[in-house]
Image (cartoon, rainbow, N blue to C red; front, side):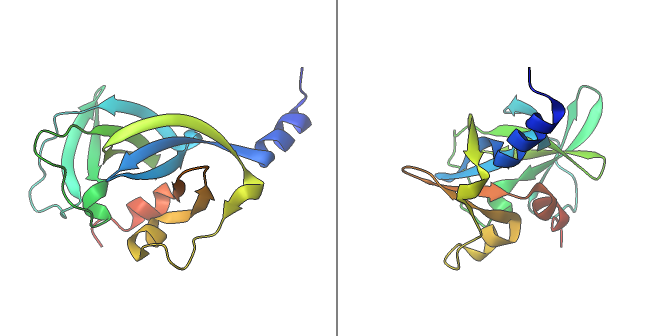
Length: 154
C-alpha cells in the first residue's frame, strides 16, 4: 500500500489525459478536468450567442453551455452526416460541453517529456494550449480548459 507522500510523488511524475480528436488533430484534456463524456446531444440554439456557442443542453437537470471547439479553433465545419461527441468540463462552477469529433483513450504521460508550445504551433491552438507531447506517431496538444473557455465570446 502506498502512503500519501508516495502517491503525491507519483502524481508529479506523470499525468493522465483523455485524448480527443478534432479535424484530424489529437488533443488532450487532463482527466481530472473531465466531468462526463457524452454521445451526440440535442443542443438548443441560444439567440445572439457568439458563433462558437452551439447552444445549451440539459444534463441531468443542469443547463450546460455547448461549445463547438471546431468553430473556436477556426477549423472547417463537420461534414454533413458526421457525428460528434461531447466532453463535459467544469469552469468557474459552471458546466460546459465541448463538442468534438470523437473521444480517444486515456493515456498517462510523463511530465519530463512535456514541452512548451513550439513557435510553429497554430496561433489559435497556442491560445488554448499549455504545451505538447510528442507521441510515437502523433502530436498531442494539451488543452487548457480555462484558456479555452475564458476567451469564449471575446
